[in-house]
Amino acid sequence: MYEAQRLSLVEKIHQKGITNKEVLKALNRVERHLFVPKALEHHAYTDVALPIGSGQTISQPYTVAYMTQALDLKVGDKVLEIGTGSGYQAAVLNSMGMKVYSIERQFDIYLKTQKLFDEMQLRIVVRFGDGTIGWEEYSPFEGIIVTAGSPKIPIALKKQLAVGGKMVIPVGDRNSQVLITITKIDEETFEEKESPQFTFVPLIGREGWSQ
Ligand code: SAM
Image (cartoon, rainbow, N blue to C red; front, top):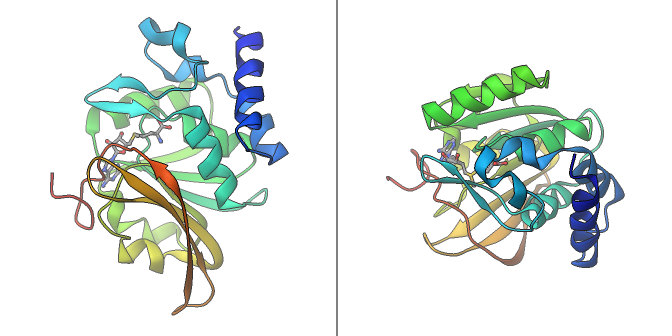
């Protein structure tokens, strides 16, 4: 279903500067309409964020593509996602052959998306909780992707990043953030690169916003 619309969306994302072929192929494989509320299904292949209930959103496809490309991962890499939301970003990473671990702090969203992953038989490990403290048990991660806007870079996430790994995180105030891509050079040294402005819902937690 929606094959032509999906292909046209991927073409637009390519024209906007996403060149990683594996990312573009994954966006063409993963059926975004299965991750949005039924009533909004016909908007699934428009390049916009959409509401998913409980005041949250499924990220804009271009943003998903941008962040996935920035992570620069290889097949089999372990990735931690903070903010499972609809599950779409996790499904894109899973479809590229990554081992995905994802944390969601809203219980209703967590339950719904966990059920969806089960129905779709996607092997994505999901946990309910505060992602700003990471998931030490499965660390280190070759990639960490934070899909909510944070006032700062959580220290626990820097610790749980593998040496040579990358974290992509929106940092700024509550209304607007810049995407920061961090590369861990060694346990003490991190390189940071800033990308353009994006807008995300707030990251709420011990090392995020208080509410
Ligand atoms: N990655 C999602 C997708 O593909 O649909 C988009 C997620 S939405 C923009 C951000 C999500 O982050 C929301 O579901 C929100 O509840 C969650 N969130 C906010 N703070 C969090 C935290 N500290 N830990 C885990 N999840 C958090």
